[in-house]
Image (cartoon, rainbow, N blue to C red; front, side, top):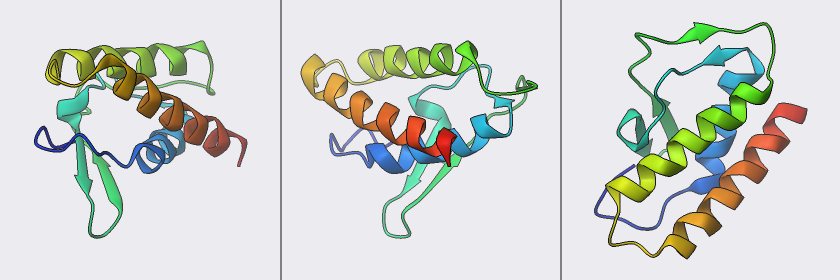
Length: 102
């Protein structure tokens, strides 16, 4: 995600992460630096999979991955109000949950 923008396509990111998680693909260090967002094409790329792993199915590890992402957003965007990040993460998590059910 771009540091210059506080507007992020939260649901798009959540849906993308859900597609990986639905297949059991676990990113070892999902943080804001590992998400590339192409806003014009409405695509999200997840990079830096060198320590990723394959799980048998989605599980509690999915929440830990999303918690790691949220911590990184607070570190990467300290000037952004915590409430904005929390609201965005709620949108991301809702899209993630919906993506896992699809």
